[in-house]
Amino acid sequence: MTGSARSRDPEPTAGIIDAQSVKAAASVPAATRGFDGGKKVNGRKRHIVVDTLGLLLHVMVTAASVTDREAGQTLLARLHERNWRVTRVWADGGYTGRLVDFARDVLSVALTVVRRSDDTSGFTVLPKRWLVERTFAWLMHSRRLARDYERRTDTSEAVIR
Image (tube, rainbow, N blue to C red; front, side):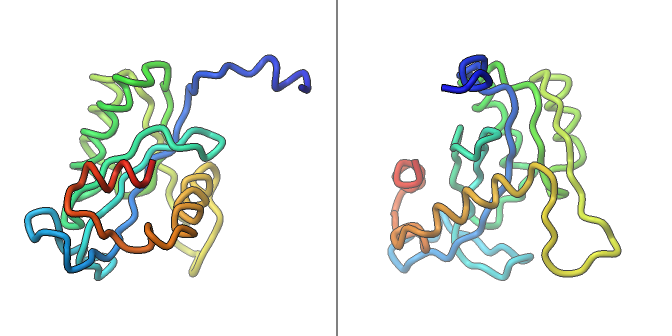
């Protein structure tokens, strides 16, 4: 092991949060599916938090119609219960508003929103945010995760883990 690997704390202190909408199979009940208007997807949404290496810390599956802010509050609270040392989380523009205040005041977590520049078009690599996108790419390599086939959301979360 190198010197920096020995001195690294095994418990994460920072994370990155994001969501991904995926189409749902016909077997998914209507009660747990929804329509994501931004992505034009009828299905479910995967909300994940990863550490600074891109390793999964927590996952939550909801209907695609649930906004990032709504799910983010529950996800960050669950993350705080399990990984209480996480004090900084990076997020995209969907996690603004009262969620930043909730994270700071209730959970003592600094939620930093990393925004895209208005003058750029197409794909741009954003600091820290690319880690969670890479994790989603890893997940999509599995054929079973390319679409949500599970009837229950807890089963879907277990398959992602």
